[in-house]
Image (cartoon, one colour):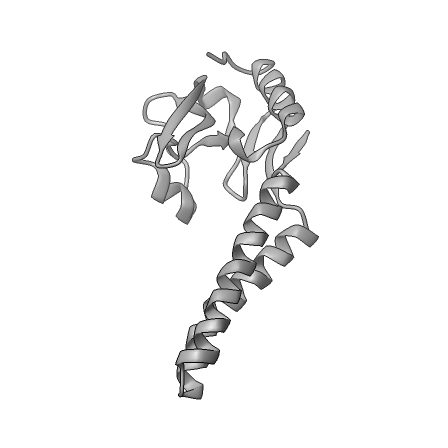
Length: 154
């Protein structure tokens, strides 16, 4: 069973990218005299807008669950036999709490990590977590029910 990122949340990110693009364009048109500096200033906002358009047009899979395990984003699938339990947490972030499901693995179980998993491994979200805050309400309930079929969810 596949679960996808919330379209509503993706639209918010798209609007933010457009605002950043507009601010950069205004600064470029009013303050930059150099063509090179203008190009450099507009590069990242333009890439941000293009990336968010791509994500809106081609929905990104958040998780895939089957009887063998769970694959979160583009990471290596996490096998259910390696999971001790799953827990729901509400991580404290600067703008409020972010709800996620964290997977506790058996000791000495090692998986190759993606760049993002390496960044998250020492945070509250850990390397293997499902960001519930990025999903629709009906998908949150469905993924919790699906996970409970294969492991204990606190």
